[in-house]
Amino acid sequence: MDESSDKIASRASGVLYEGKNDEGKEDLYVGFSFSYYYHLNQKYINPYFGLGAFLGITFNCSDKEREEGCIEDLAALTYPEIGVSIKLGKLHIYPFVRRYDFGDENTYGLNLGLKF
Image (cartoon, rainbow, N blue to C red):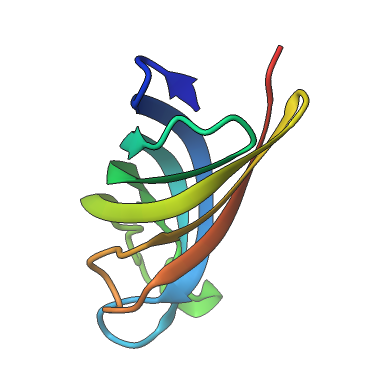
C-alpha cells in the first residue's frame, strides 16, 4: 500500500482470479488492478475501504473452442473493496473482499507485499 497521506493510500498489483463468468462457466482472469483507499492510519492492523479498477483478459476457451477460433475476452471493470492491512515488519498482508461485476459474487483474496 502506497500511503499517499495520513488516511489515503493506493496499491497496484497483478491479479489471477478463477471464478464463474456471466454465463455461469468457470473462467480464469489474468491482469492488473489499481486500487485507491481510505484507511484509519493504524500502525499494525489498519482497516480500509475504497475503489479499484481491473484490466486484463479472460481464458474461458476450451481446447476444442481454441481450434475453432475462440477469442479470449478483454475485461475492464471497477469494483468496491474492503479489507485490512496487517504490517509485520517489512511483510505486509492484505486480506480483502471485492465485488466484481461478473458473476454477482463477492471475491475474497489475499495480497502479500514486502516493503523495501
